[in-house]
Amino acid sequence: MAEINRQQLILALIPAGVKPRLAGVDFTALDMTRLDFEGANMRAANLEVATIREAILRSVNLSFANMQSVQAVGADFHGANLTGVNLAGANLSGARLSNANLTNANLNSANLQGALLSGANVSGVKFDQNTTWPDGKKGNEGNPASYT
Image 1 (tube, one colour):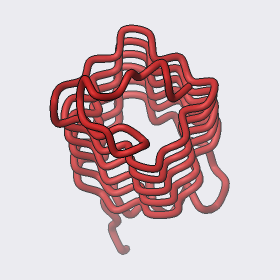
Image 2: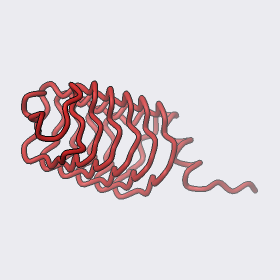
Image 3: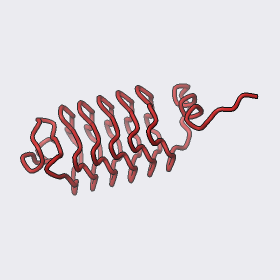
Image 4: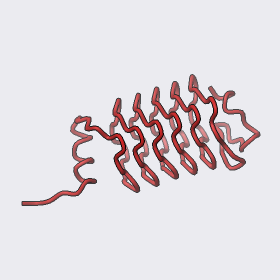
């Protein structure tokens, strides 16, 4: 009987439309390009250095997830709960974060160039001089609230 590993199982279930419980799951360094996670509970999941380019993450609960250095170019986080998420060093260029809750998110050194933040809650977000805002401004040159 053939054996499959956790990565193969997760990647097989998600495209089939099955919404397994993904809270606390370790997705470290997985390539999940263009997968559909819409509405999934991924609270406190570990997506460190994962690739989620053009993935659908609408209305996903990613609160308190570790998404440090994630590659999320063009990902759709519309309406997602990103409360307290660690996005330090993340590449979110061109991502859709409209109506997302980013309360207390860590955006240190994150790249949000071209991202859409309309209607997003950015209360208490942390950022540093290396954070790149949607208009290309760096750090304190941009104000998170001005992009919502």
